[in-house]
Image (cartoon, rainbow, N blue to C red; front, side, top):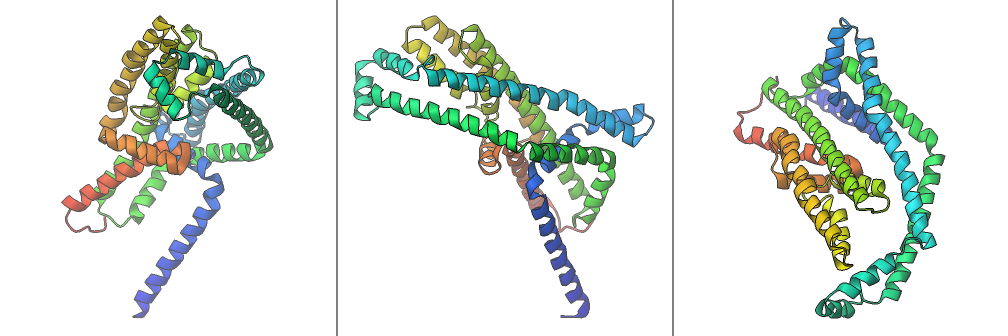
Length: 352
């Protein structure tokens, strides 16, 4: 091994070592860094417009974009989160005090089930209402305790949350202001041809914008529609169920139906036929069509990913990375397909 080759390998080793060290250092603020990057990509078009309006004053344009992000995204999220915690606490308190009795609802469903179905439930031990009631009571108590514990944990970790929030905004400001130069430096460091680097970066930003904007718009629409029909039908904690349906709507095809379908079954089983029919019709033809129409247009069209790839990558991403996975999963899938497409069609790569 000659001296130049040894020096090169040593440098690469040190480069990988310090890169791994930086990743370890940033792990406590993983969420803040991740969403700082995501929001800066999403709001870059607005920043560019403000840059023209402010006559190329980068700091002023970045500050204006940051303020718009806070007003459009962050303030509504805080308001909804606080309302959700309040309504969730009230719901669990009603279950705990018996104002809402899940066992009674279960008994009504069991009484309405046909005899063959009832016999099957008896065989699997699901017709013992007393035992089921005890399990539900225990679940309600654990849910109340969990909610109280989480609320206390949030209060205790307020400082950490504030620091992470500040890091996100701080990073977003500089990514908006210096994003173009940083992007150029990153592209120069990647040992691929200029065409391939341009293709990969375009795919990266396109997938992020389509996934975040598309999925969030679909989730908000489905959650709002679900909460509206629940409120019209007089179902308690409509806001809570709306937010839960919005989160579940991040899962393509199956999302919101995991909430409204069981409620519709309960209505039908307890004799509230018209409520059940209305909920099923609204769920299939309104909430369902939002997913079937908007998601392919907003997500699949730009990412050029098949629906089954979006579904599997979203589920896998959320299983590994939590809520952030609804972005990370499809992004990795899209980059995977893009890289293999480049590998299968390209000539030997030269550094760009």
